[in-house]
Length: 292
Image (cartoon, rainbow, N blue to C red; front, side, top):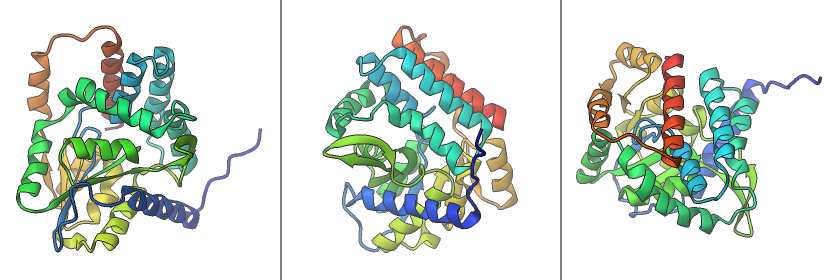
């Protein structure tokens, strides 16, 4: 069995920069218009803006619409959970995990996925949004600041989320598209870890943003590079590693989980295909807890 090549530091940095630049380029113009001279706030999505993993909710919503089978969703969920539990930062490991997400859209039309994404947002994602985080984002908008999502979710889906939430725009993982269809390949690695920071830097350079005057919000220690890139980092619903890092560096910490747990106790149990979504979300949460 051939040994797997481990990328060296320059290779990794170049790949992260490629992913970051591709994400900034794919973000295109700000959805609600760039505000000249404004500052910005950058929000992670999974467990920061939304409970669980947005790509899980999307995948299950597609399965409910017979885009593919529930068995395929479960296989995808297991692969993603293994990646979360491993805590791997190796590019090949990340690409392997993301390939599961890309496999179900290979050969599919982008406009078809986005049309279904609109329905899934209304049916499966709205009730998973975290009110406290949305209030933080709205506070920045009310202050005349831009708000951008930064997520490993495909950039087309990330932009859909930003538009539906009334935010400025979104940075996400860029998939290769030919003739309006997904090829199943990525442009650079997933927007994860250092790649997020590179995307923020690339967007700031394009939009003329002073990052020392900007904010960033995330729940994960994987996003410490992005949080460190701005002058006002905030740990939201942080994992144990990020909480410790935030305390050591005098970063603000906001935790809305207790409030959300109480809210969920009042929600009737889910059934059928929705139960798959709940199971995947729980599995994702368990993985995060174990890593913490």
